[in-house]
Every structure is written in C-alpha cells, then in structure tokens.
Amino acid sequence: MKADLLLTNARVRTLEGDGHDQLAPAVAIWRDRVVALEDVPATRTIDLDGAVVTPGFHDAHNHMAWYGLSLAEVDLRVPSLEALYDAVAARAAVAPEGEWIVGAGYDENKLGAHPDRDALDRAAPGRKVWLKHTSGHMCVVNGPLLADLGLADAPVEVPGGLVVADGAGRPTGLLQEQAQQLLNRLVLPYPVDTLVDAIERAGRVYLSQGITSVVEAGVGGGWIGKSPVEVAAYQRALDLGRLPVRVELMVATDVLHPLAAHDADGITLGLDLGIRTGLGDDRLRIGPVKIFSDGSLIGHTCAMTEDFADTPGQRGYLQDDAAALHARILDAHRSGWRVAAHAIGDAAIDLVLDAVEEAQRRWPRPDVRHRIEHFGVSRPDQVARASALGVLPVPQGRFVGEIGDGMLRALGPERAGWAYRYRSLLDAGITPPGSSDRPVVDGAPLLGIHDMVNRRTDAGTPCGPEEAISGLEALTAYTLGSAYASHAERDRGTIEVGKYADLAVLSDDPATVDPTTIRDIEVLRTVVAGEVVWTR
Image 1 (cartoon, one colour):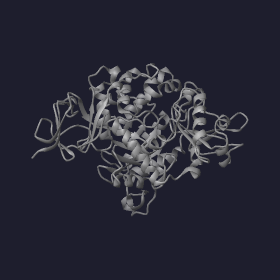
Image 2 (cartoon, one colour; image 1 turned 30 degrees about the vertical axis):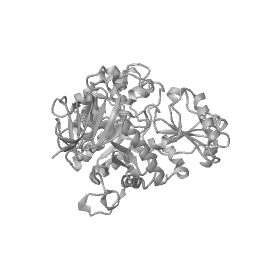
Image 3 (cartoon, one colour; image 1 turned 60 degrees about the horizontal axis):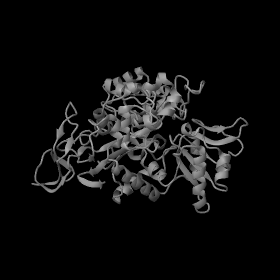
Image 4 (cartoon, one colour; image 1 turned 180 degrees about the vertical axis):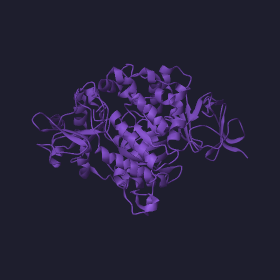
C-alpha cells in the first residue's frame, strides 16, 4: 500500500520522546494520519528542499469570531490619538449613511490616553462610534451612543464594571469590564451568517501562520459572546467546509443554568440535555466552561493583592462577588465540566486556586486539567500550588513583546518576572501551552515563540528575562503543550505514526536558529488532516 503524500528531504522535528528532540528525514501520510517517518512509496511526493517540519501550531486561547469580525473594522493599532481620530474620520467619510464606525485594537498605554467622546463626535459628526480596547476588557463610545444608553450626562452603577466619568461626573465614553454589556441590546446578537464569514476569515489567516487547531475562548454569552446560538455558527461553518482549522469551544459561564437532574447524578449546572465538556469530534467539540474572575493587566482592571506600580491605591477588582465566583467553579466542576477561569491578577488567581482545591476535595476527579487562562501576575507560591493541584496555567508569550511596556509600567521592575511566566512553570513540572489571546495581540505563533525565548518588549526592554525558555521548549508549548491542555495529546502535538497529519513547514528551525531571528522564520506550507491547505 502506498502513502497518499510523502514530504521528503526535510528536517522533521517530531517532538516525540522524553528528549523532545528527535529529527526525521521525511513524513509519510495516509488519509489523515502519519504512517511513517522515512521515505516510502507514495502517490504524491513533495521535496521540501531541507525545510523544517513541525507539528501544526495549536493556539490554546484565541477569539476566532472576534478576530474575524475585527478584520472588517477600523484598525486602531496606531501611534497616537491624532492618528486614531484620523482613522475614525476616514472611515466615517466613506461609510454608508447610518452605519456605525467600529474600530478595534487601541491601547492607551501607547496613545497616552483613552479616546474621548467629544473628540470622537468631532471626528465622525452625526455617527455612532464604538472603539474596542486591545485587551477586550473595555471600550469607548461617543456621545450619540451614550445618549442611546441613557448615559449622556451621568453614569450608572454596574456590578463588576465601571462607567468612567470625569471630575464633573460626566461619562467620558469609557466602559470597563461588565459595563460593556450595556451595549449588548444595541449590537447583539450577530447573525449566524456574519459569524460564519468571520470564522472563515480568521481561519484562513491561521492557516497562513501554521496554525492547525485552536481553542475559542468564550462563546454564547457575557461580553465575550457574539450570539446565544454561537455554536451553531461553528457547526454551519463546518458543514459548509468553511471551518479551516480544528476548534474547541469554551462555553461562557453565563449560558450555564441549573438542571433538574437526579440528585445522585451531581449535575447541578450545565446546558440542556446535560451537554458538557468533551461533546463533539476532532474537528469541532465542546471544551471547558469559561469563567471570568477579573479583568486586564494593562487596563488596570485585574484583581491584585498589591497596588499597581503606576497607580498607587488601585488594585483592580473582581468581575463578580467572590463567593459567587467560588460557587460557580465548584458547581461547574461537580457537574463534569473542565473549568477555564480567566484570572490575571494574583488576587484572582488565589480565588480560583482555592475553589479548585475545594472542588477536588469534595468531588474528586482524576486528571481534570482545569485551567487558569492567562495566569498573568502569579506569585512563586501560586506556581507551586497550581502544580500541586494539577491546574494548567495558560499564559500568552506574545504579551511580553506587544504590550509588555504597558505591563512593566503596571507592575514595576520588581514584579516583571511574575508576568506571563514560562520558565517557572516548566521548572515546577507543569506542561504549559502556547497561546495568543488574539486579537488582543498579533497571534502569529512564531511571534509568540520569539517572545517566550527572548523576553523583551517590542521596544527592546527586558521583561522578566529570568522567565525565558529555549526555542525547543517554546515550540513544544505551542504544539504538544497546547494539545495536552485540551486532553488531545494522544492525537496531536507531536509527529508520530498514528497521529493526525497536522503539520507546519517552516523556513528554519525555532529550536536551533539564532533566538533573535525566530520572528523572521516563514511558514512555507500548512497541512491539516493530511491535506496541504496553504502554500506560500
């Protein structure tokens, strides 16, 4: 029997074995699986001319629909407030009558301040303007939208959020955390067809960057969800052949509700019919439940045990009452869900670890792999505790490069090494994944790997260099580590006989190249399930 496809004359970094450093000369594929790591007869052969083959990259925390939607919005990754207002004005000049001006990606740490409602009114007179912060944890709206929300002259109290006002008590247009949900009645839900378009747009970009699988970090509810039937958009995309990569969906905790199961079942919280983590197949499945415990580091809304370095007296805040968050994690665990708790500040991390410890004590479940998304500012004792509890931190290496200067200002030099750790996690025996939180930052995996290895901001400033890891360790995180975080290491994450043929073909080897040039490596081909789905 012949293989369907042979990739030969290659440097195949398999990442299999205890050393994670095996190299093979070829990969043979039959149907969707690897069948040999040597030259064998094949129906089709591609000579890679010495290129490097790695497992396909797996982004363990991204926002696929959000990113796909942002590709059609005004790009606010600009160097100044003036440039931002110019970009808004330029879109307003050509947008159809009545269309909102929606932009994404601004960072006040780089602009010097948040956009202002009055300046936006001047840039887009008569228009409704909605600008999303790069973190996703806040946004700015202009006067007409504030009027629609009943906030033109005075703020309202929002549990777990803030309508920011100036010294005179007049809203500035900045809505933080849960206050963003005030907009939901005006913008949600998105039509399923719109979301399918966004999912496909995002997926095509992912293929060009060697990404073959992702975790979508929150669907169906909260400020992160785009529709109460969001899963249907992914199912439709799959049915239409428009879901380019494998996807695991985190369900927003807002959509879970009490279930009338038998008392002996212990299923107190979930989706109708008892649907929970694990339903689906290798192309699309339900993953953990997403629980937001706090906010953003660069936005100063994450819950800290000590003051932010650049804003004395401020320590951020939780997204909900601490007891309610604790109970939600317990209920989700007891009901059979894996938990993926967003926790960036160390106070929020304490809350999540306490809840997981109690949940496992009361209702033990083996090898659950509950996750803490971001694990953004973690004390050394929290690293050790996460390891002991079997909790998987899910940090974003790319944050160090793209938003690291803002993180440094928020933390100060003493705590810089606590931010988005990797070295300490590995040394504690944890298997950390690689992820981006795209579109918060540029999600290209090679950029993330570069920053995990070099630990410098894009401005060149060291950011906790003691947390740097090797190129091989970073590559392993973005492949095997991410597969492990999804309980998928039996089928993905390494190049081995019997595993899915999900591969990235690279111009050089991240494990051996000069570390300062990892960002310059090019993706030449991407293979999903044995099919070459993208070629440079």
